[in-house]
Image 1: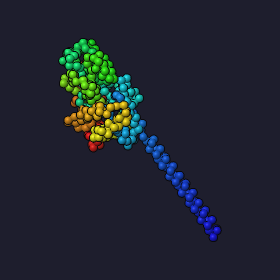
Image 2: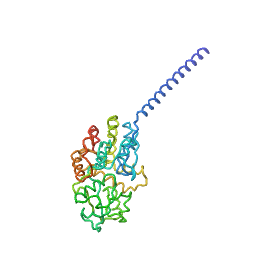
Image 3: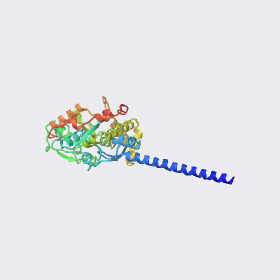
Image 4: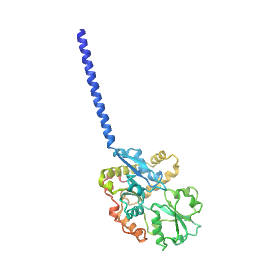
Length: 346
């Protein structure tokens, strides 16, 4: 009997040992599997054209909701700023993707032989205007002569030159200075004219009770400038097209969700930067939705080649570029077209 019990104990011990080894093997396999999954995540970064705000809500939403992670991308979102140039940072390889100034700045970058390709255009209507006070004496573009004008040097300066060229004004007949981060120089009348996005700076002026303004919108002078170009390099498109496709898919999904759930999108933006004011961000995303998906839009970030060519012709006529840019080489809509149809519109 004792012999039987001893044998039973030894058998049970062997079973526990085998089970333990089996669990260890399975656990190791799981760990290795997780490690392989982690290694499969592609490291990438997105350089924004400006500081964190609802203008970029879709990217922050895509990251917060795990859309980039689901696409196999470990994405770092790097805010921009007044002394950062997204075009240069992406072209140098410091960042994988970038949201740059706009069509005019992208064409200017290609004119300088930067190897950048736009894979989407966020704002399909001109989202900014040039503002002055209605008592400034500036009633027409010709009145800009001799005035001090502030502009961001991320593309809007090219639009300004093209606008003023339609009135016969040339560089040197007005003073063009870099625009401050805030609108204070304009508010304090240190400059005569300033640029203001319809979704941000213009809203700031209205919130401060400044309504005695005269607006000069590029579209009114035959110059529609589509803005916020999503760019990467020719090399990345050639060597890692699947990464580009995955990034585009996750980005579209993020923007679709952001525009469908604007309150939640603002929540996510405020988590990223708690110093922002909610009311201002809510007004911003509403305006962003209008310029991103105007009437007749087929998809978010749509690349409209006919409109791009017209914009280039206007800028060429104004002497902004030294030579024509190959629009088909500068813009590539193949990734947008290949994205699932159900994430292309909000």
